[in-house]
Amino acid sequence: MIRFLSFMMILSFLGLSSCKKDSNSPANCSANWALEVQDEFTALSNAASAYSSDPTAETCVAYKNAYQDYIDVLKPLKNCATYTAQQKADLQQAIDEAEDDIATLCEE
Image (tube, rainbow, N blue to C red; front, side, top):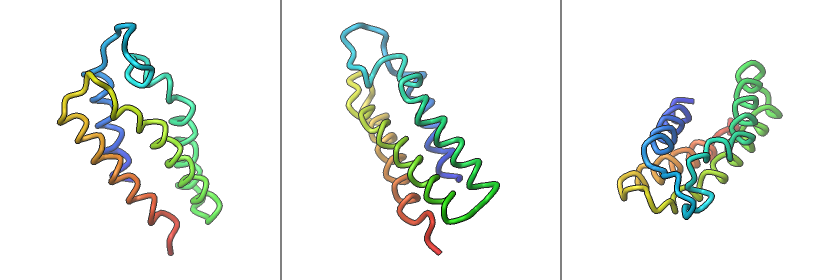
């Protein structure tokens, strides 16, 4: 859960500090990227809440799947031309750490 929060903080920073609103930006770099991933974020939040309140194998798998879906929808942000090399590296590190967490999530 700690890495999830770190992951969210990095993404918030990237979203607030780097994307321009010009019409030449790719969709994955638009100023509205947070709205574009809202469904996946909502699903992840709901799955995390469900797993937290009822830590069963089923809720864990649902959480794991929602987490992976959210990461998958964020991966194109690495191609945002307006991000600095450091921001891209930070995003990649956050994605790698999140995927490491997912790999062992539900193991007993």
